[in-house]
Image (cartoon, rainbow, N blue to C red; front, side):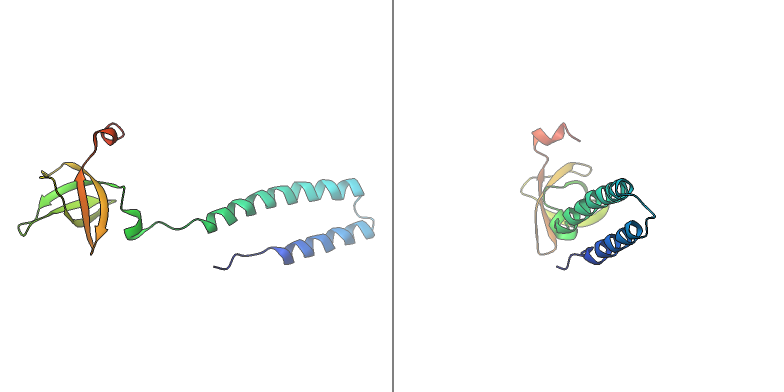
Length: 126
């Protein structure tokens, strides 16, 4: 994955600051203050952006295990329809579930969720 670098921008800023110093438009103290006022926030923001870019994106199937869902209905062929993150999914469960029950997503197999009753320790955080 390519990460953007700001090397060219830094070189241009150093050249511009050098020109201002050379032409006498700014003092050494002013140059140091300007570099600190612009450079430090730019460094801190770019560090946060770089961290965010390195984090893996959890969307779709990868984000579902560990999610909470609600049973919508029972499927006549077996299994259930559950709503998780605003989407309707087909689900299987080792537990007998009822409509409206809150469940916990264990895994995704072949475009179908594997769910179980909500563990008691997670019930308090709903």
